Image (cartoon, rainbow, N blue to C red; front, side, top):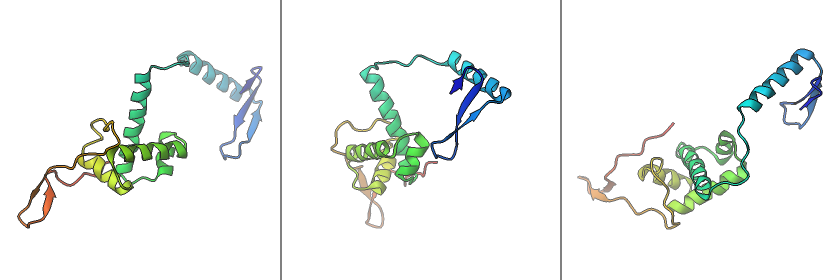
Length: 153
């Protein structure tokens, strides 16, 4: 916050919720200039959004979460990396698992990789994914036609 172009209230970076009041003219001028550049480049905040735009944004978030699920990230780290609250992240993970029919997080990562869900939309219904076609190998064990999933980074 800038007051009368003479004082700047700067939040502390220690998560204490505190702030410091800065009166140094060089720092105040810098803060004012940064604000003015951001203001010129800003776009107006829309009050209403089209349903399709909201759905696409949600799908983008879910695909980002799926990429991190495949790598084995925990919900807390996924939330931090994507700028979500932990609860919102957990809700998205639960929706993803429900939509693909996963029994647990490991199973979800496997299904995401095997069904190439990082490159195509999630199923719309919560019935899960159809099993992949399989064929017997020479040892008599059944094996998926696709190769082992790649680990994404």
